[in-house]
Length: 231
Image 1 (cartoon, rainbow, N blue to C red):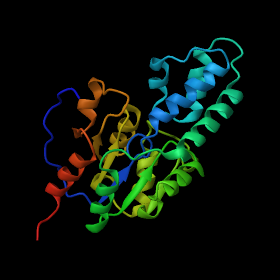
Image 2 (image 1 turned 120 degrees about the vertical axis):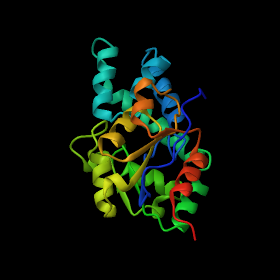
Image 3 (image 1 turned 30 degrees about the vertical axis):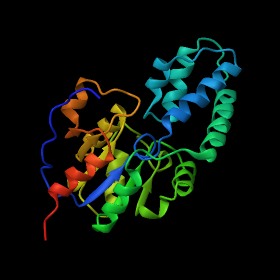
Image 4 (image 1 turned 90 degrees about the horizontal axis):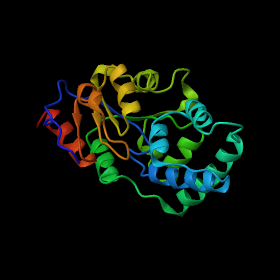
């Protein structure tokens, strides 16, 4: 991981934590890449990594537009996604690990009474099904999906709605994201935004938008711990 500015203490005591799902808690982005590449191969199309990275952290409606622009001509988007989704589900149910430290960090936060929510670009019911399959669904007091918002990421609506469902001011929430698109959404909501890069390396704006760029969820836990009252 490239060197980034040292993480400064959080400016306020966190009263809730809002997580992105894919790539942040669930190690699914590489599975999506494999599924999409195989679906493209089945259509006789090349699917470069650079194209996939443009899709990470972006809702499907926008991704359909990007794919249609890339594959000039009559791109069979429904057939592509039907195949990619089926392949993803097969690989996912075969066992997709969590991101390093995910389960331990969530348990640690729960033990300290910090309410948690999900804000994801994945639609319902897929989001809830993935969390349930991973044994994480019951940990979260709220799950906000693409189906709940009219303005998806990078707009801050999903994070603002998640904070509202937790009954906490967005400024008092820590948001944890893995993609630049999600980071923009968390920052737009006014949250203390933390970035743990997964497949997409952070650009120059990430240093401005993120309170900290961290290597993993263990580092997130340490930063939150330092901001909580002792005793």
